[in-house]
Image 1 (cartoon, each protein chain N blue to C red):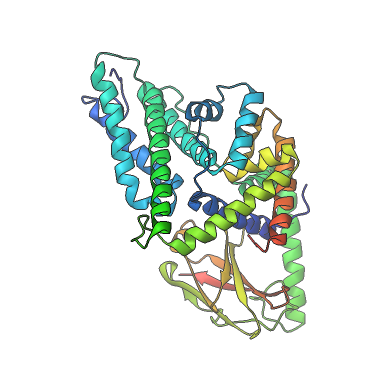
Image 2 (image 1 turned 90 degrees about the vertical axis):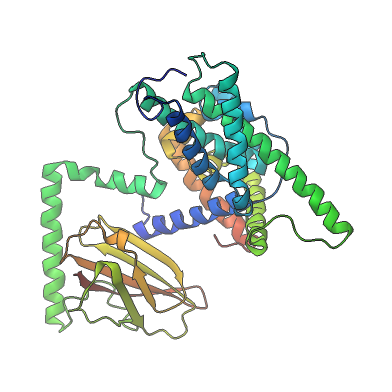
Length: 181
Length: 244
């Protein structure tokens, strides 16, 4: 990997990997459900191994840019999350068949509460008119108004209005379901 | 200009944050994700129509929503790493500003215009003078400003007391029927604005990092709201304590 300067460059390409590892850790911490907290290290390791494997396969390639490697790490994580989800479903079926220790740690009450709210949010979003739904969805995903506007291909003022009206409708719908956000 | 008050927006920001937390902690499996398509949508590499289609999936499916958040975090980190590796785009990365903060920024735009700023400052001084004079005429404590109708909530911190930044503990009493409390804390210029919701005790420690920007001796304004069993809200006066 040819890198010129910054944390990705310097004497050792490992500095770039360290940065990627740190960023992956942060992304996982901000994205993963609390119940997967103890799996973060495993997920991180799997993604890093995939990146290192890719690098090792063709060490001379200069085009392994951060953007490319971060994307590889991201897709690996999605695969792993899917695998974990599938394993959990199997484990739940086994629990239904007979008593067994739960495999997923975390706070089950909190997870149940979060799932109930999240399900209600999804239901309510489906009841909004489409443009509001899209704008509010991106807002709930943490996008700023300019980011949401750019992603949706609309102007910022319109997007901002859609978010405000959409949030208001979402709150009303959630209230009807007994959820006061 | 919106007719919304700053506290409405702070409240909204807090409730949006709670919804985001619930979505993040949701463990529902969802359907298989097209990870590449999500990445391309997040990075604006798909046409707008297709991006909107992906957002539709994100709205309806927890796995797609998780993938979107991950793609967002990773693509932003990648962009920063890219900038660091090439030295291109030395400007600061775009800052994620919450909606409420964005409106607050818009309100502050006028501050960059000297004539408006001077007129506004004069108006503030004038209004402040009138308020203090009227309070003095009425025999009220000038350290207690605004919200005078709700006298039932009283401060438990003597107003002459200067509080330490690391131990800025405010207390109050009154309204025994209150089911929860909210506190809002601000500096005099309102550049600092902090709100804490759903407190169950009549005491709150203002986090030290909230007060970080204020110099020693600064006046810190705080106001308490009691939420009553019928859902209504009773506000206190605004109390003032100095930062030690």
